[in-house]
Length: 168
Image (cartoon, rainbow, N blue to C red; front, side, top):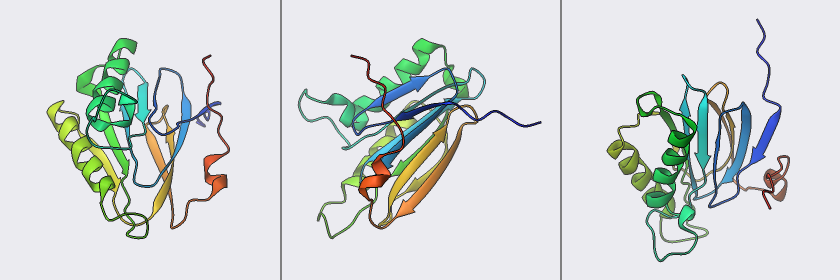
């Protein structure tokens, strides 16, 4: 039996959160940023974020911070009907290159994400973090599967191919 591929696509910008109850193919591009992809395979409710920094500093752009974005992502999924006991997590990203920075912010963000998921008792079933490669991530919410493309240099074209939904 062939399964139907999701027809709905969404490109997740840095500092964004996306949840859905329909099959979507969510894409994002990560350097030092980290994405937490969550799925409840029973209710078919899924979500993904794109986190830039580990902890909140100030009150602007809160979804850029792991300590705000992950609890918010979970809350949005619960509002759609996800059950905490069924949720599984994938953590992707957090690369580091001495060429661009002396601080390994990706590693700090990954550590914060894992700490938060542990606090919520959400099991991490896939951890593709660290290293020097940037990543393009495709999350098939219907299957709860992740495809990760790694690249030394993320190109402009890596940011295209998926359209963001304009809610204005």
